[in-house]
Structure formats: C-alpha cells, structure tokens
Image 1 (cartoon, rainbow, N blue to C red):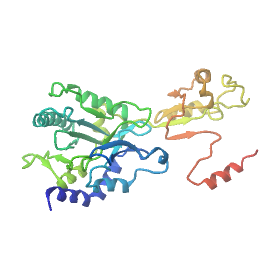
Image 2 (tube, one colour):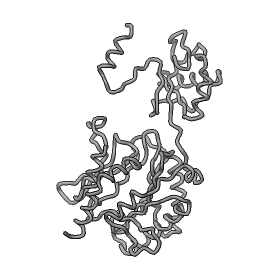
Image 3 (cartoon, helix red, strand yellow):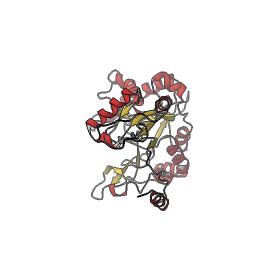
Length: 358
C-alpha cells in the first residue's frame, strides 16, 4: 500500500467522527453548501453551490453527506461549508492563505505563506485561542481556523479577522489573504470554504501544524492530524469578548396589526393607523430587546409610506424596536395574530385552517 492510499484509509476510518465534529462546530447552514463537481471533459473541478436549484428545500446537508466527504479518495465531490448562517451568525473564522501566481517560485511561495500563517497562528494562540493551522494543498496554500463554542455575530467575526490580517504586507504577502466570512453581511448565501480532507484536484490530504514543543515533525498527517483537529478547543465568550467577537442577538419578528397595534378600527389603508397599542406592548418589547433583536414586518411595509406610518406610530407611543423591515427577515420566531404554526404535518395545518370561520 502506497503512502497516499494509507493516509486516505485513515481519513476514511475516522469519517464518522469527523462528520460529527464538522456538524457540531463548522456547519452554519444545511440548506445550501459548496461542492466541487468533476468535469468529464478535463481534469478540472468546478465549484458550485449545492444542491441544484430545483432540489433546494428538499435535500439537506446532513451527517451522511459529511461522512462521504471525509471518506472520499477521488478528485471532485468534495464539500464546502458556508461561513455564515441565515441570521448572520458564524461558528468559525478562517484565513485562506493561497498561492495566487502559479508562475512564481513554489518553494519561496510556500515558505513565505507559511511564515505569515505561523505569525497569525501565534497571535491567536497568545490571546488564549486554540487555532488550527492546516496545509490545504501541499504547495503553499494554508487554512488558519478558529472554532467557537457558540455561533457568534458574523459582523464581529469579520471585523476581527480583517484587523488580524491588516499587517499582511509587513508579513511579506502581496495580497490580503481571503477571510471567511469575507463580509459582515450577505444578501444571499455568502462564501464557503472547502472542508478538510482530500484536495479537490491534487492527491493531497490535509496536514495539521504540530504545535507541540520540540516536535520531531512540523506536520501531522492521517490519524495524528485528525486527532489534533478533534481535540481543538472551541473558543468561549470569555476569550472572544476581549477581541471584539460578540454573540449575535437573535431576531424576533413581530407583525404589526393585531400584535402591536390593537387594530380595533380595521383596515383603513397602509398609512392610516388610528388605534392605540395592545395593553402591555411597550413593556413586552422592552423585555424582549434585552435579549433579542426585535424587528417589525407587516403588509404595510410594502410601501415607503406604510413603513413611515408604522415608525411614526411607534415613536408616538414610545415603543422602540431595532428595525421596521422592508422585506420579511430571517428570524428565530415570527409573532403574528393570524398565524398557524407549521410543524411538518400538512393534514394538521389544513384541519386548523378549516376551523376558521369563512
């Protein structure tokens, strides 16, 4: 058995453990993910967002998908994970230090990239964090990863990462390395990073930097690399708060009419809001905002005039919310006086709808 097959076998043996670790600490969303598709006409792999459009909402990233990724010995089929959830929280920060110019001296590129990666690794370690430095492709590409004990605000994770790599020129790099998450917010799915394991084109499995003092070899491979990954200490709030990485207040989305506005007079147009708040509204919103981001979304919000009417009504009654939304936002929960909760059983939903008077 050659070296590559031996290492591939060790990753395959640990695929179940790795899938559990990845689902627990790395997966930010399961509705979409990254995937490398092998082209039949050449040896290249094309990066796509999975699943295909007509399968979204039907097929999900799950433990079995992750397990197959870690068992994969072939080029193509490797998976990537998005760096932010729908509600803009992130379970990890990654720095991707890549080989940008294939014409440059590979040995010099590898040494320069590794020196920068080790410098940032040490900065993170000095802050009490437990970074993972991984050799992603064997020719000068490195991933530096920190995982969090809980999902944190994507905006704060991005800002910390941007500040961390701001000295890239001083560390000898021509370009700022790619960050994940690379933006504080996203309109669609955001960016994704390939999971550790087999490279999508090169015959290379992820190696992990050996941070043990006086280590015989600088890189861990196979079982040793996997053990180091699984032993990574997720960063807790006490370590993240001093560097500016904060928890994200989850969003609670409130309907307006019949939830905040008593709606006694019925509909008189999007701009006409004649009635007072429901009793206890102001105090309830104050309590919610101590823990959650509270936003308002209503059919009135389809026009600028309707949104302004809601904002004026809220000010008039001294009710402070975080935002009156133009579009329905992703949220932890939605509060609506006319809603029927959907729990996966359409027969129950139809039965409950029929209970309403016509």
